[in-house]
Figure 1 (cartoon, rainbow, N blue to C red):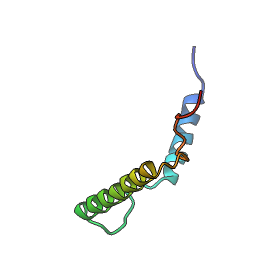
Figure 2: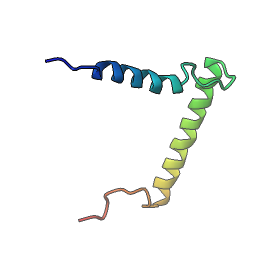
Figure 3: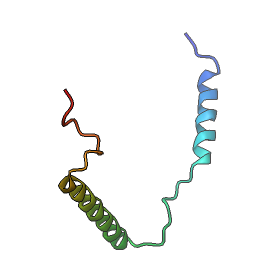
Length: 68
């Protein structure tokens, strides 16, 4: 059983979709070391917010406590 020109059309469509995306990673002007430091700082801040939320007793986080 042959697929006719379906394979060729699919290949062309895939190329068109891939052509819209850039192959270059985002250029934020940072070195890998600076990027690591920035990401680590953001993660620490996020963890601190979560800890403060947990310590404050705020149940807006969507936990399952109290659900029956």
